[in-house]
Length: 318
Image (cartoon, rainbow, N blue to C red; front, top):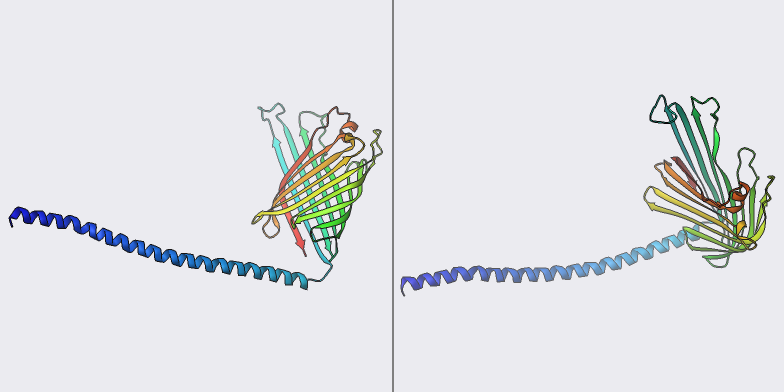
């Protein structure tokens, strides 16, 4: 065998050896992958079975806890939000009024007491929103430099229901809305009394549908407010969005059967964070009431709105 032939065999061997090693390594990796995939599938089946067992046990524990909790069951809570802003300008020439001071104070509180019986429930809620604004133009001796009311609303509801099923009940509702400052208490005042049904599709949501509802309107003003028969719709939703952030939304509407101008609605949303009961809160309120717009001699019916951002304090107990 010549030297050239020997070199050719040597080169061929050196080139084929790594390929053989790679082929062997790939086979080993494939076998290891198959083994681990089999183990993973087995563990997934075990995890699925364990998860199902945990869920079943949680359901059983919740059911036993419910059976051991005596009736009636009461829950009560209180959430307050205080917002304030102070500002002062002296010889601030970019402003049209260079010497001013302003104070804005807003306060909201929401309290509830709910009772639950085996075949009935009773839910009570009160919401109070107050706000004051003081603006002083130091260069104008004739301006109003005292506190003026910027927000004023009181809402109280009481809902009683007889359960036909865990999610559906025959119910009656009483709701009262008014202002409380500057002689506005019950002037005007709105009282809704009605009958219908209450639907609770999930624990966080309560929907009231009362096709038989009378809306009483009380007023001592020159404008003649009209009471009327109609339908009442209320939706109350409470949700913990993420840890430390809660959302409460309440929508209340009256739909008059007699005249659309007698209809009205109020929608209030509260967002709050809390650490040991103290946090930051944001209240946003929207309201539409054609009769109030006509009493104010407005041609249109503007959307009434307010918001209060401030410090919150929450207290609740079962």
